[in-house]
Amino acid sequence: MNQLAGRIGDAALSMSPGHLVDKLLDWLEELRGAMALAEIDGLARSEARTKVLFD
Image (cartoon, rainbow, N blue to C red; front, top):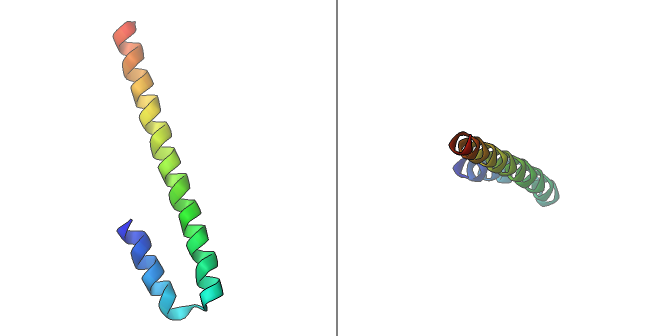
């Protein structure tokens, strides 16, 4: 999250407001994708542990 804030701060100094909003939306989409991957990984690990316990 700190990385995203840093990227926004740097971009704010060099971009027009409209372009900054577009970039912010792009970065939020990247963050959402990364969070989804982390959730999928967590579910896969949980499923693997459950399988080990019940096999």
